[in-house]
Length: 602
Image (cartoon, rainbow, N blue to C red; front, side):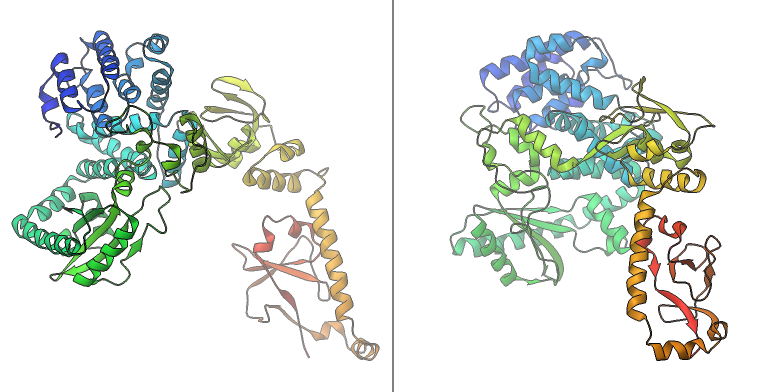
């Protein structure tokens, strides 16, 4: 049984702490691993023994607690040592080489990766920006254990957030909710995600947190009896058919309740489905048998059954979910195997689980659930590096992530350059760009940018877009803005795309005229009439003439001219000649076009 968190808030003696660690995790590490961890602990104490944090506590307590969090996840000695050293570069920036010599390459790589993330000026101003930051974190590290260590670091900081100001508490809580909770979810680490969400709610909205806590704690004895009765009925029914199950009951975590309150616009006292059971069995077949038992005991609620075994979630999560009406109250029930439960709780961390009772060999690659895409890995000798490289490719796709000098993250297609970056900030900056710096060094405007570079744009008020820039950019925004500027301002600009569109349009019009060419008799009859007298003064749009229509001044179409129309943002329907170059240059015109024709009197 793990020691309480409070114990490690009062005990500060380094020897007592490390002894307690190995008492708690006595079966998790070999003697050689224990010796390495003790050596790392002594190294940390030697560097930080006399250092205090702002709260007045010893500097080494936080790394110790972070190590303990991942030891509870059964992670290996390299990860535990990396937890102890995850912020040691703040104390001694030049010790990385010494750490590699004493504790190995893997430890130094993880330490360096965590230091890089710690140094970031993360500025999550929007949901999109937060998602870019999460992807960028994957892009900048070479070992996924860096992410695991940082998740444990954030969790411990949330557990010990009382010592900072209320304003700082809210800022940190927002960062954790925006960046780290979704990251834990993406890695399938639901236990870490749930605790961080609850702690974030506690500090970001303390009034609601206390309200939910009060509701959940009310009628505790009544709730316990209700859950015990439910557990007993399922256990008895499973025992009758020879299925061995483990059933645990719980109240849903507070942030989940808070989300339900917001979604349904209800107070916590108005929510009834706050209780849940989890049934652990041995095989997939038993899972489906048990769902039949549960639905036989109680009536399931319509639309609340989810089969994540047949169709796993993107992060590898598998389970059967149902909600039943038990004794007049909704009861949520999850059914999964032991293996599914391990993946649900630990997610990608299970890749580094020890094989209990044997040695420190890693679980086989073919037993893993790859994040975002469940599939069988055929290479039994798949290394950690290859595993994480594939994981990064699946998560990131063909994107790079770079910083503005203020710390905002910009996601761009792979191969993008400084011109693309400038236009992603603002069109005005893109149009005036004359130079760029990456991490303080001058780079060519057309040089492909690299992940996590800090890009600074140099502008000149006399600069303007050029045709060579148009050919160099990768993003659609930059291409459209440069194209529009050249079309309007550069008389030497030859718009190849528009010329091709014009040729295609003219060919289509010629075919259309040929098909609609009247017989000689009808044509002679029509020629006797005055063409102007046949025009009603309106233009028909999709066979209806009751529209606000603006005739374009660039080509000034007149009755009898072939015309085309599109939906403009301010002028209703705008009508051009079919061969008008301005019309052909409008971005994404095919998505905004409508059928128009002159309204002629019969």
